[in-house]
Image (cartoon, rainbow over all chains, first blue to last red; front, side, top):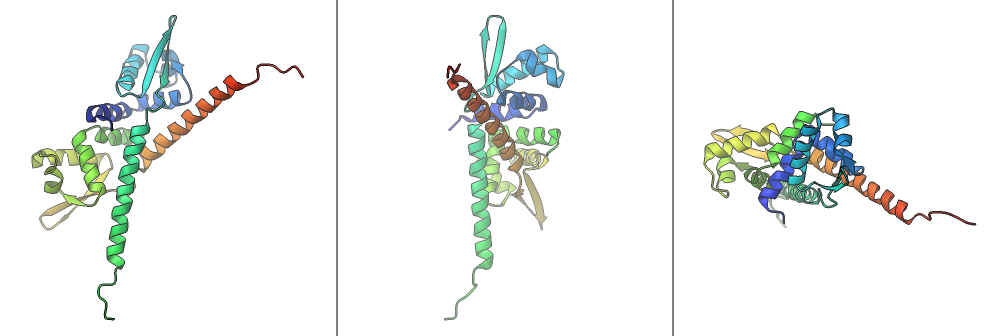
Length: 111
Length: 111
C-alpha cells in the first residue's frame, strides 16, 4: 500500500485542469515540455512547475537526451487510484446490498 | 462530463488522509460527525471543515434529523474518477501496444 503522504501528492497533482490535461496527453505517449505546454497555452516555466508536481505525485518521469527533456507516464501511475476507488465502490455496493436485504427480509415467521 | 472546477474540488477533497479515512468509513455506511471524528482523533470543528470539503467535492451529502446530522456517500461519488482513470489506462495500453507493434514489425519484406 502507498504511504498516505504519497497518496496526498498523487491526488493533489490531479486536482488541476492543466495537470490533468498533461496526464491526458502523456497517456497517449511521451512528450516534451513545449509539446505539453502548447495545447493549454501556458508559458514554459509554468508548465515545468506543473510537471514537477506531477513528478512528485509519482505520475510522470522525465529523461534528458541531449538538450531535449522528454516526459512520460509511469506505467503504474494510476494503479493505486484505480484500486482505492474500486475498494470504495465495492464497500458501497456491499452496504447497499445489506440495506436492501434488511428492507426485504421477512419480519417474522409463523411456521 | 463533469466541469473542470468540480473535478478539481473532487481530487482536492481526496488529497488528505483524514478525508480519505472519512470516505472509507462512509463507504461502509452512513455516520454522524462524532462517529467520523472518533477513529482519526480530531476535534469536531476540524471534522466539520473536512466534511465541508468532501461535500464541495460532491463526495458526500448530509441530512439533519432532530439534532443529529448524518453523512452518507453520494452513490455516484467516485464514478467520474473511476471513469477518468479507466480512460487514461486504456490510452496508455493502446500507446504501449503501438510501441510493441512498431518494435516487432518486420522492417522489410523481400518476398
